[in-house]
Every structure is written in structure tokens, then in C-alpha cells.
Image (cartoon, rainbow, N blue to C red; front, side):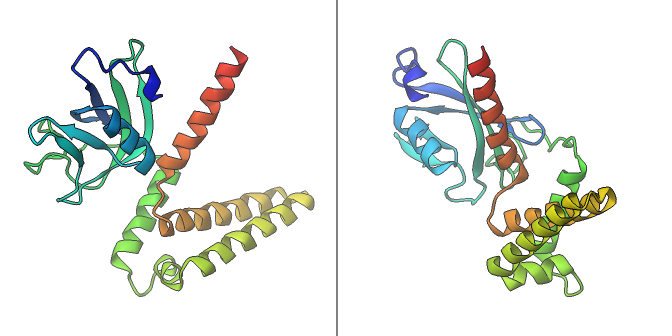
Length: 207
């Protein structure tokens, strides 16, 4: 992808527009040189070239408000980037959610999105009565075991032609998979990005 970019128009830089992956809200605009693009692609966190400090800087390197990359696209002229990312807190140094002074826009929440948010809340608060919190505290091994168990139960229900059973077991499987993703620090939007990339590749092959 880097080879598709034209760094010559702005003396070795290209503008990078960053959007919230969940709502498509524009968060900020920065500049990247070749090294910043490579670092962003490698580490999956947005890294810019600071024109004032003349060095690479990862967004959130001091504040912790990083931008986790979901997808990167090059425009038709090869002289700009569109990055979709998951923001960890306010994006602007002034404290506003975006660098344009906007509050966070509501996301188009699906059932999966809402369940992911509930799991995130349980992980942060760890309420004593929560099964999700208890499962997260037991660690990756136990969570992975539950995912495996629910996968087997889903397969068994399918082999028995138990339609209702497949629905129930699939719901259990999806829930435990979301818990595992949380345990691994992976957002649903990141998985969606992988699926989107695969679909785009398949579509380009057909073309």
C-alpha cells in the first residue's frame, strides 16, 4: 500500500483523515511520512509525523488516548489516507472528543455492539455478582475453554437438526467469543475490518 502513495506533493508527507470506526465521525487530520505509515501498519496504532517536533509520534503516547487501527484506505490519487480507528478516550488535546470540538456521535448499535459494551463495562468495574466479570478474572484459559464447549454444543445441536438448540447454543457461543475478544483486547470492529478486507479481496478477484 505504501508504494501506492504519492509523497512528492507535500514534501514527503500525505494527509491522513482519521474516522471513528464505529460511527464514521471524523476525529482528526494529521500528516504521515513513509515511516509513519509503515509504523502505523505494523503496530496497528495511528502514528503521525510531527511537523513541529520533526519526529514520529504515536497518537496518545503521553495521554494514553491512542487510536487503534481498524482499516486504512488510499484515495484515488494516492495522495491521502483514510484511517478508521477505535479511539481510547478523547482525541483532542483540549479534551473534546474530536479535534473539531465535537462530542461523540451515537453509533449505530447492533445487538452485538450493545453486548460488547456491556462486557466492556463488566471488565472495567468487575462487579462481584457478574458472571462476565468472574469469567474474565479466571483468565484466558477458562474463557477459551468455554468458547470451545459452546462451539461443540452448537455443532451437536446442528447435527441433531435441533433448530431451537442451534439458536440457543449459537447465542452462548457468540457471547463467550465476545468475552474472549475482550480478554485479548480486540474489538468487534477490528474483526469486522478483517472480514471487510476479505470481502474486498474477493470482490476484486471477481472484477
